[in-house]
Length: 436
Ligand SMILES: Cc1cc2nc3c(=O)[nH]c(=O)nc-3n(C[C@H](O)[C@H](O)[C@H](O)COP(=O)(O)OP(=O)(O)OC[C@H]3O[C@@H](n4cnc5c(N)ncnc54)[C@H](O)[C@@H]3O)c2cc1C
Image (cartoon, rainbow, N blue to C red):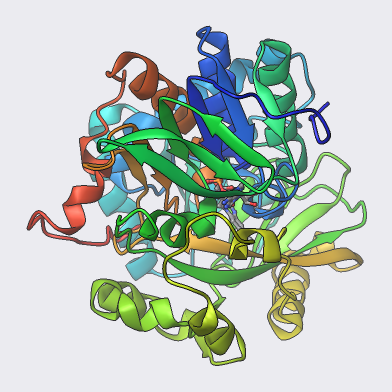
């Protein structure tokens, strides 16, 4: 039970901003370690990306820099239901990427080579093995990249279960309560100003998803981050193709716990031209080039709405975080129609599928498409956990564990250096890993 009407605590050790999977996991692991923690969510738990994603939990195809953290996360996922005493829809059915030609197979081989050091169970399936996995026989696919130990979970269940478990361990969780800004004293975090008053604290973990850059800019922190919209549909129960989540380039799907499928177009998304798109144009040029035709630019009234929002504020007046309680963008009908048609064309078992629901979510991305996790230089005591770039659901439990370790002990079991914010300003080469 989240506390919507209870009085705010006057003081705590750590405030977590954001009730997505990353914020909820951070609060859970802090509470488990006995650290007093309060989580504030402006809307509802998992209202934004964390309930809208595909539900894939994968090591496969990741930037090698992320592999140590996602390996840790898979370890957590395997026992998370028992640990939380909750059904998360966790199923270790594998993840499969399909290849149509030698070029795509070459990318799989290159990734396998990079990932070799981590001794994963990923392997390249032959055309015959791929058909066997998919219950097909037409040799449509040249090969597949397959990781049997990857899995899936139900996004709508995971973050709420983490929040509930955190509360049972003593964390306080407030929904419908936006944090407006952070108060500092002598260069250190002193507390947060919420729409319902102040809570003093020693540290703040900002896990505010697509809002993190805007929120942090008010504190003088520059986090290059942009949002892209992605659309998803779910079907009514349908015949089983495979328990593995499948990326077939033009369509991606995974079996749901309710017997249907979550289906989306592999890479297609909409990029809204807002003022930040120009602010971070140079940093994101490689990402724009790489997205190519998968990315559709759109100019709308959102540009002016964002332009009119103040760049700095003091917490005394309502903010953008209260104006947009839950980002709920309209799904792209044409993209979903295409994905559905491709699913039916490529997988005859799905010829009769019927759509039950469609939705969209805004994904936060960074210039190198890996997250930012760590402390900022100033103010002291302010930590970022954001920029998961479309794959933060799977890594979410580990992100929470690592943030909790960092805040409470100052050291983490996985090296967070690759995820430092300063990589964007310290002269480090910013490159996007060419994931298969
Ligand atoms: C369509 C789609 C498909 C995806 N598929 C996958 C997938 O298959 N596998 C995978 O690993 N990842 C996937 N992702 C990415 C994944 O969903 C995200 O990386 C992950 O959910 C991020 O979690 P988060 O907690 O950081 O952010 P969010 O879930 O976005 O949560 C941030 C929360 O912060 C709150 N907040 C913001 N500002 C404030 C404030 N000032 N005060 C209080 N609260 C605030 C917001 O309301 C929000 O609830 C997908 C995403 C989308 C949209």
